[in-house]
Length: 390
Length: 140
Image (cartoon, rainbow over the protein chains, first blue to last red):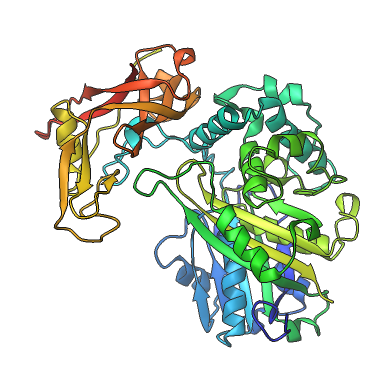
């Protein structure tokens, strides 16, 4: 790939994950601003270098990106408030790289912040209660919840392929084992498959410990041209491939088991010109245990229906064939509602070999896949393949 | 276990045919006269032809089978919290489209993927003159 071609022409120069998991005395924008400072410091840049602003959150509405620019007193040349759910920030990296490649900006800042935990948000089980919106009238009368949608996917997967609750539990246990190595992780005591299977049922077949936690948090990513990134203090992380996709009920005939990751992943692999076996570790949005299994299959790391065996044979463990979420993921480290930014941040830190006890051994190529919305209903997918600079 | 108190559905001109049909005890779907597409949920035009003039409503059989389901044990929303556990499901209708619904009048353990089901209609108590009902499904 030519260094001047998209997407190699842009690189990630700095990242920052907010260490707090509970911030009752901070606002969402305040968390985003603290993260901006952290990522710019990491990149060896200052706020006056920023000419591209990207961001999303659960409360930023119409013109939210303009509100964010005002809060930071920034006047960027390029802005993008794309919100496609939790995968937004993975997509923002693609959009920022494209903008840098096109010469529309040179230093792009991507921001996320949330006070979901301190606001006591019931993200998964708040239900879709009363609604006067004709568009939601086709699910609000039926008690659709986020976890219920994923549970219907899980049940179909079990019926189609014989996947078991024990196999799903193995994913939660692995994420918790990884979290024990992450000093910032919210959940820091070990669990067993029996603990997962014995935890209260939320929406069959998903138990409490099949569901991600709810935390506060935030993060930031700084991108610039690959050329400029080489002169900055941290080793640049290159973008090798990217893809975005959407999946939904359409006119009522979608194959529920095919998720957006299939399309976005294939596009990213085609662009990167790498094989599944070249990926040293993966950051996969783990809103629920089933999300990981569905994503592994749809990205092509195993055949449809083989996800259960893949995880129960230790495939996603730190020492496994494809280490997944060394930080402990949304199941055990942090999940403030839209987790996509942490997938990229951890991938970058791992590729820079800054992760201490949870460090994957000498990684060169990583994949990050974010899911936004709900599989089993409608959702977006965004995939990035990232690599060390060579 | 209490019965679900379904939030009242509200209709636009695009979806009125469905909800009025349900009020008469009919499951109403849309078909494009031009390309033959049967679509759900309803729209003001055929989603494939993108033309508004060829769409007609018809009364479907009300029969289908369970595509997948979940037994909801926790939902904090009013009308559902008291009704847990309840069975939320996708039903594939005989005419092709899939519909989100609840399976009622049975124990959750009686429901299985592929089980034949038939629509029934829960009348709504409302004060705006609409005679809508919420289609739910029972094991057939």
